[in-house]
Length: 296
View 1 (cartoon, rainbow, N blue to C red):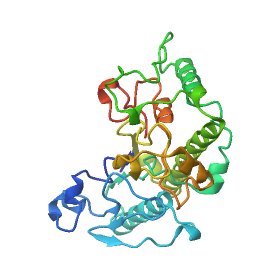
View 2 (view 1 turned 180 degrees about the vertical axis):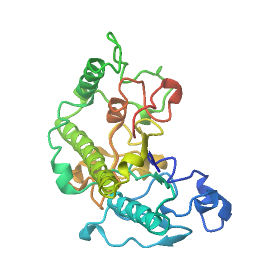
View 3 (view 1 turned 90 degrees about the vertical axis):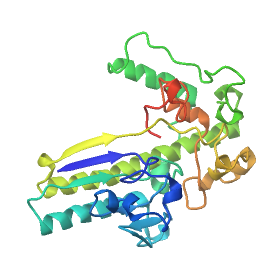
View 4 (view 1 turned 180 degrees about the horizontal axis):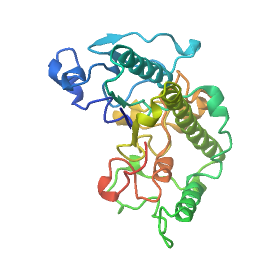
């Protein structure tokens, strides 16, 4: 048996152009047309984690409940993965299975339950530049990087060769309100990470309880680096970036207490994207600059 996981952004189970994700697409390009017996998830780069666009096998389905009843896609997909494996073992207990498990995390939008967000209050108050120094020291200490490795600049590209929306605002140039906002965005991101990890843990627990864990190969994969699509000031609606519309710090601040909730489609600022890609330069979309090996 094999459990393979890839961070979203490429796809759940398979990858194909978004223009072929409609009902007019050939069935051969869907998950079941590419060899999978079952499919559950969303097709595309991202989706709302509170209200996802869900597909089961070859048809759209409604989510089982709403966020006010405890719904989150990370929990839902873990439930479905467990049921798929259980069904497989019921009908053909000796047959090996292969599961490609792709949650929406840690792709934007960064959605997480409030109690998980609260756990990280104050954890990022030193800012993204200090975070980079802390991460680099730990990587050297653990032998991941060699002694003498130095941090790259937070804005490493030659002026005029990078879009302003991909620049990082130095931490010491931010106002107190901006620092508070940016810290909360990182707290929400961390909360989403932990919440998803807990759901994956439930799947692993099921494998152990059912006696399958020792006979299961688990591959934990990621497809690209941290995302800089939150712009230099972060966003309560990532779609602004996709449409070339500038974010407004005042609007973001007004919704600081709703970050991570169903009322937002939030994303952290580019400073955290660079920090979460330490020790590399830049972030996702800059593979030539090596800013791709960490999770988004």
